[in-house]
Length: 423
Image: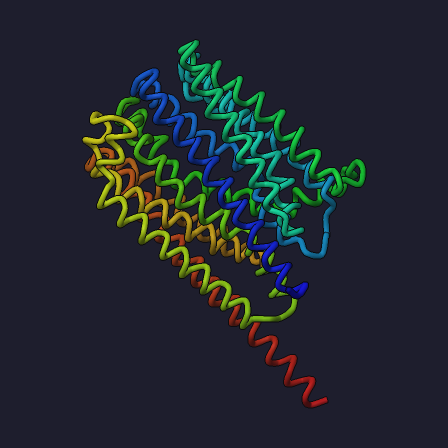
């Protein structure tokens, strides 16, 4: 076997480990929503759904849009230590935002504590994400996959045991977060120590945060758009309906997770191909990723239609399964989010940020009024309709942006070739 084929096998094995680990981790996240219904009831599931929705927004602040930026930093413009230090700054900002959100929303002490603690639990993912991007640049995402396997086991094991023993959701989340953060430092930190060179300078961290600020807004809005219908659902329709909607929505997140973790390594490849000026290879890679994602989405939709109600009955019981009509639109929402994530990641890899903000400003401007009006008219289903409308608009802008950017770079390349021939 040649060195080239050995490297390919290594990359394939690495991606498989990463995909398996990510699917398992988010399967464990989904199991929490199933177990909370069984252990503490639908109202508790509504609180957990609120924690998940709010937590997604705050972890987007903590991540500051840096994963794809770091993974496509093929020229090492910033050090690993700068990325890690910046995550401490953005994490503090996210924590302050979560506390402010709880205080302004007037939640009960139980809900407020659960929301803040759930963000702290998710912050372990944010810290691990810095190591993950470094592993990705070295084509060793198998390490990240194994980390997610470990943290998935810890999460679901502790969630079930502590919740069953205490019937206290906030305490359960606190114990999970503590153990998962310890796992990140003991496993990822040990594996990633080769990337550390010393303490990052403040000016480097400041420059990195400044450059990634547009991406922070992009990912915050990108997370907010699909979460907004759920955040509105609690005051508009009540915790019970949010619990039902959130429980059914959670399994559909596997579509996004497959997209993110199966296609994440390709963000580095997109950057490398663009750096080489290999536009043909860039387009082929993008076309393959889009076709694979379309196939995954179609398979998920077919599974939802054929066995969706049966699966929900097994997982949650007949009370939740009676709302199975919500499943297909939620699968479409998850698929659109996956497509938007992939297209956005490609634009980040080629350092085209303005289109990202344009797409999300458009969808964010639509989502809140659409969700409010549609939930009033179509109840829980209205939340999905609003998300489909907003995400669809964003995808149209992102597709137009990719055609524009690649066409512009092809034109520049042709001009450069013509100039060389004349010389």
